[in-house]
Length: 296
Ligand SMILES: Nc1ncnc2c1ncn2[C@@H]1O[C@H](COP(=O)(O)OP(=O)(O)OP(=O)(O)O)[C@@H](O)[C@H]1O
Image 1 (cartoon, protein in one colour):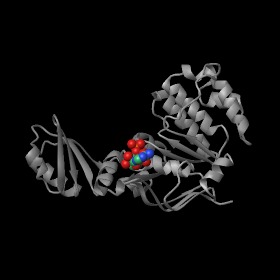
Image 2 (cartoon, rainbow, N blue to C red):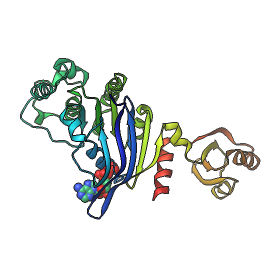
Image 3 (tube, helix red, strand yellow):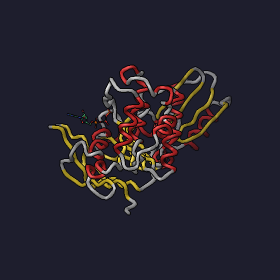
């Protein structure tokens, strides 16, 4: 059995004049939890739809579980949760989930599936009567109903409240612990930071960064120096060695710098009363903005 779950080489897809995926290479091994990040229009959904066999590439190769995506999906080895997938309104949660579980050779036990996805109390309710977040939980239950090898989740936590999000990620982590491979797209960077083993950052249909959160953060050649000053002066701070930008919020100052040592020495000389000083790397959000802007 192959240990590569997704293998993508030189993948391209355009819609008329718009190039959505532009020569993408990606290998995802079994058991990895991979977040696909990128600004609006970066090509995330197009990539996921090709992985699910819903869209055909224009060129390049794409294999899922060692064969064409449609084959892996037909074998029930891929579970998907798509943005705003429609649900039949008239049937109840229990009826739908039982019917879908029965389609799979390795369908999960319905009662356990309902409790794992927080749907037990909604079992008898018609889908048309569910709230947006409850529908999202049903979509998740459908994605995991067949105990697939690969989970493809497109913005899975949109519409979920704080507690449901936490429960959702706990469940996804347990799927990965049991050897499942998870590929998810999200705009919630904190979720990617907390749960992904690996981040693939897309911009304009290309991979601009690929690695752990720490790797992605270290790709940005800036550090942040934060401190509290009495009477900070924007112009003076921006002129300190290494500083590329200064942000002032009252007396709290954040300096972006390419040379934190030089900045710090100059800062202490210019403002001897500087206190509560923090020096650190950029966070994932800063790295995201910097790396995707460079691409543009
Ligand atoms: N059916 C379509 N017809 C024409 N253009 C499309 C179609 N679907 C997507 N596009 C375009 O392809 C590009 C990539 O879109 P895609 O939906 O893959 O991006 P995304 O990263 O998922 O974006 P978002 O974060 O906004 O969901 C965008 O420029 C988009 O406008």
